[in-house]
Image 1 (cartoon, one colour):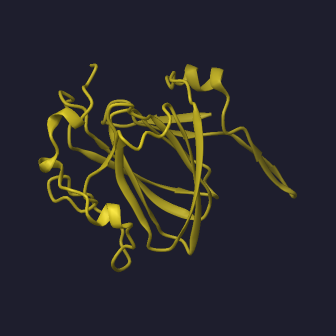
Image 2 (image 1 turned 180 degrees about the horizontal axis):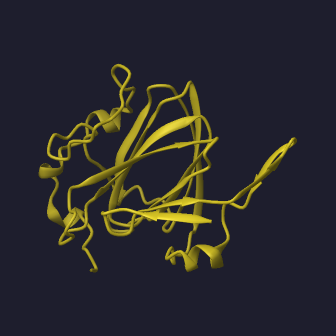
Image 3 (image 1 turned 30 degrees about the vertical axis):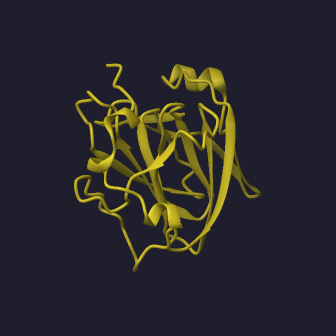
Length: 186
């Protein structure tokens, strides 16, 4: 297994080993002890799947309290996946990092608690899955506008993205009270 770390503390790109032959391939996509050795030490408590069509943009979402870390991957199709550091006191507060995930490359993106998360579907359809370190808490959930100019995400858009009503109405980061944000533990 190979891991890449980024300049936003805590983000990791994980490449599980694949074993293939003429029949296809096999990969172990979760093994608690091996992931702890990579520095992903949280306990995952919920798994989610989402099927989306081309041009769908989901995000940017977070929870506070009840912040969720996420280990995300694509099983079919391709997405541009983004994490934004929202931890007050973090040296990378408000900065983003994006990666392309697809069913062929098998990459996983670990997004720690305290980050906004979102993705844009590049393929005709995408089956997106993720493990979370905390259960979904509707009372704790919030969104930030996907095109917030203070964050400046360079989305690889092909036209106007398809958004949920909630994401269309999301506020700018500057409009959120600081009490909605996680704290950087250092």
